Image (cartoon, rainbow, N blue to C red; front, side, top):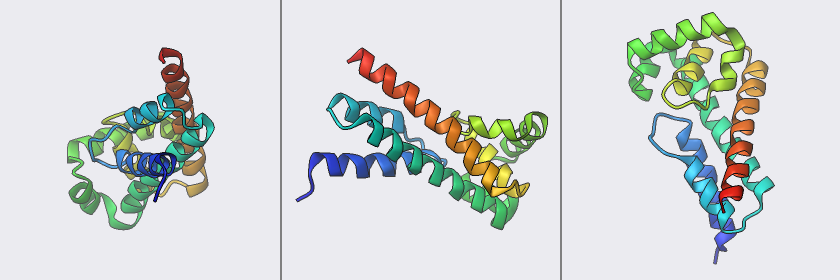
Length: 146
């Protein structure tokens, strides 16, 4: 039988992965609940970050291999959202990948990065940095409130 911790880490990974796609999920809530219930903060931050980055890599892959039309259809990103994300990406450059965690704008940015064929190394480094920092801040806040 699985322990609470095992199920917690697995659930957090799934929530983090899916939250990086177009599904309206909040991995932050799952992370906070698990932190309050005593699971290891460093392990939780690592699991959430890996899951969320892998979800963003899925978006990147759809943009890279499927192109904007198919990515729009599969990810339900409207053409207007896609154009705005592309404009943001062109205006702010690679640094915009640090904000892939931001609701509404983050998912389209990761798809655009794939369409524009941004180097995978830069994508992974910058997306990971932004998502890791977000989960650290959320963890600190959740533990202080508790």
